[in-house]
Length: 388
Image 1 (cartoon, rainbow, N blue to C red):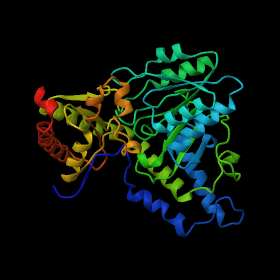
Image 2 (image 1 turned 135 degrees about the vertical axis):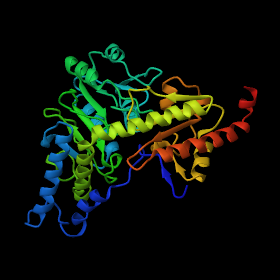
Image 3 (image 1 turned 90 degrees about the horizontal axis):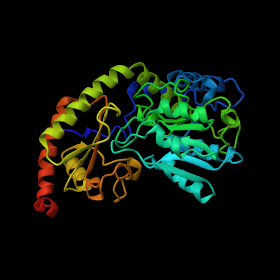
Image 4 (image 1 turned 60 degrees about the vertical axis):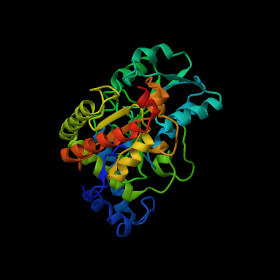
């Protein structure tokens, strides 16, 4: 098969041509700073506010509850650190999970060094966080619960409504890292009792370097970026107008087609899972069989190293991953897979396939065909496989 086959849509997606077309005027024609007072800034300012309205509608929020950031990492940092410091007079305890994205985990670890206490909830073997475990962890000093909407490696979707309901009943702020979920599954922040939600445009065919934090009215995380008066004095920095416009265009398209995209990708995902599990021995599907993102399939292949598997696939023109793109340079096994109970030697042999709009069944068949050959070859070189 000629050309590269891309199976890593959880890492990033290509910007759609129609999204690029909407962004282009704001690079060189309507390029004025939206914070300036002269007339040529009005077009840019209008584009920013119109985009803010579109994004808000897509997640059931109000326009003035959307604050633009540089991406999901900044949004996570702002929500967690900002809430911790804004509410430290009420308590110093935060609840999160063992398998959050590192934007959340590293932020919580830093807060621990600064005197905050953090409880890390362990997911079950299928990657689901149980609300009862969160409830047990709550103390009279708990000020924030931060649980990802859907895991970026194994795709498990968490019981966000139930967690939000619990947090509201207990009077605790609830933040969710929804970077993988926005645009992929229906989200209504009001109905789900979400106080803060992080998102990033490049996960749903928008541009990189632009994200947003939804902050419910009445919630006041401490200001994270010092500087000018942009974003109602809550996030300084000149607005990335082309990025904001692309963000809104991509999210609107994703939200208008969420149901049909989920059906299409879910069927392809299930076909892939069936083919791999039936045709390759000693394989484990990681994550819940059905409570997962429609495009995500994560496997562990016993007796092989994930890095060797990825390099072999790349030589065959297939791009995939072994987990989060943010930790692709690490030789350590996935913290997500370890958190659900996989031993190191099996966690090392993981493969994440995340499907996108451009993938086909023919490409899946090609992937499975190559996987059969590559896995067999790599296992023949493994002393552990021979011992088995």
